[in-house]
Image 1 (cartoon, rainbow, N blue to C red):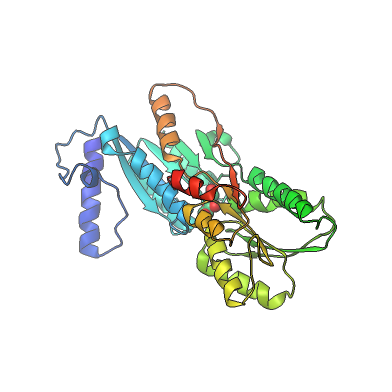
Image 2 (image 1 turned 45 degrees about the vertical axis):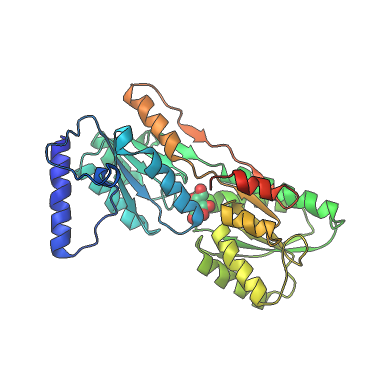
Length: 344
Ligand code: GZL
């Protein structure tokens, strides 16, 4: 079976090179086996072939997340990883999953850009007898048996913690009864991260009648769009007290816009910045006094997926929903020490 896969793979690559079509971004064994190239008589029988459809490469968090899979599912660990970047488009993911089914991979790992629209393609994978592991964001499907398990963050919990952090912060500043104007830069609509982070913060917002949410705008989880949204907010609203930004890259864009508007932010500034992901660059901005608090979203899912596949290979059951551990960081902490110890 694997010989067929290898042959299809090389014919596909040959056609791509001839037709000039965009080659999929494969992490093939040859990348890892110290430059040696694959040959037809490579025995793939002991390799676990994984088709991995990733959302995109829109953020620092995403890159770290992708790397965690590339470092876990390697030929040295007997994996053949087929990685495809969907550029944040669901239609690309649907094509990738169907491609994986055609290639008769052993497992499909899907990080769904949005929650809906997966029932048909996951039914096709199930009919082909290929287990699907959902990671990071979630799918909403009629039949939960269409996927084996989900591994990721509790986004709603992250932003409930963010709302509670803001309550405590304002209390310490003697601003508990002050009118607080808030704007939110949201992630991709209908993505689990956006839904969870928006709804979690809303739970705390509803308990604080003096908090005034001025507007929600989609920052697409990217720095460029985050800056654009923040520029709009600064042009539209005279008095912004808090920015809730649903990922660090949008926060980076917001910081640029705030600086360009000659406003200040962070613990000693006019605008309180609440961010999510807690990537290295964001903690550096926090150390520089630009970000007040950042809620971690653990990107290291590759090793956990590897553990689950190995359990499945032995016929063992796996938990349907597996939440990863996460913390938060704020400017009162020893950020130099934290930065020196974190791997991402
Ligand atoms: C969260 C993930 C989000 C990150 C963003 O798990 O889905 O997508 O918070 C990324 O950085 O774009």
